[in-house]
Image (cartoon, rainbow, N blue to C red; front, top):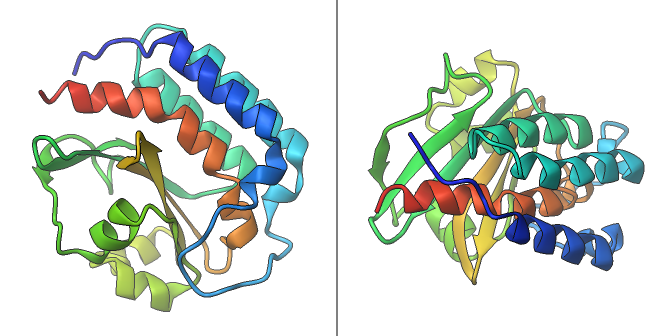
Length: 212
């Protein structure tokens, strides 16, 4: 798939607005799911790690090979800043009524490519796409309720997950999906995904435009 390079202006504006607001603003993000206290698995307690990862993403967006270069860097940055075993990027295109798993760090079990109709009756669509709030699965019971392929997810060592919406112009255009062991995700470290979602916007917009 050939897509255009995300304009640096979009990445620069997103980066400036995020850093101007400070990391404290990230913690104001509202969550969907039951409360859970932060634990010692909370990598988000190190702001310096986040800033280093955030600062690198705009530079990568200026390089050739987009959107794959930016998404691959996003994968590594989120692994460092928040943590995950499985990471995928879902892109939605409401204009054509389709979604696509465009990126996966485990393509053998979760391959990319191919589009399918958006299921507007699903809980994912109603809670994450329409409302625009992250969904946390704290343990395997949550995973079973949220994912039909929960056995495959568990076989990869994942019993916790977060689906984080990527939003632009008042709409959800995709989601960043991180999965790890049970108890890994909580309100604090999930809130810290916010700047990474914002910096992924140009890449997801380019992918969606390619479908037109």
